[in-house]
Image (cartoon, rainbow, N blue to C red):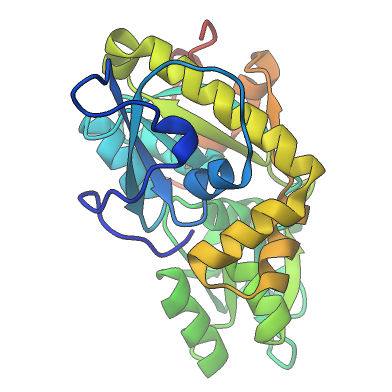
Length: 309
């Protein structure tokens, strides 16, 4: 979703989580993030609720796929990802557990085109090329939009490109559409004169998760629970006061303030209880990937949810 440093590049920990020094710390929680994500969220939230005494070590990643890889390798204890990368990771047999769920509108996930380009409807994608990242929410949107329009997947060329490469290709005319997510979609709309062909509202579950691992839940369960509580309170706060999160997001990522504000206001992550409905929505994501041969045939996602945290 956003550019970031590698796993070894832990960055400054928000003050609200650094109330102990290394020698006295009863525990450390390693959290995988994407620039402008969880760390920025907590920086924008003035949480004064007492919590457990532990340290957070942050590791920044460029997108969700390496977050899941790091979780599976037990290099981190917690990480934030969307429903499509989670489903793709489960299809790849990643040993991860969803410990918290969030619902968003889906307006920030979109297929973008040039206003003067050849693609005016989803049906027009037949015979053309759309770029996205493999296993991403953009990839999932392409599959859902094509199915909705009755366009066979094999009639469309899907090019797997990183977001910046995909945008450059679209602007240069070497591809015809780009499926992406905020802040890239907001930047494309506000600064590159790109047009939304279709977005994810009503087409995708709009879920994202905090994931952990069986090992972390066994060894640091109380820390994971405390961290989830902090994130949930921060989500509630920033839904009510999006300007504060947008300001921190813009500062940490370098995106223009108006892009950050559009993204935060329309994403509007709301904490939701992990229930049968959430699990069914996630199952639909895995099943969609399985239909096009991307793995996960017959996979039951229920064991990948931790409902007792």
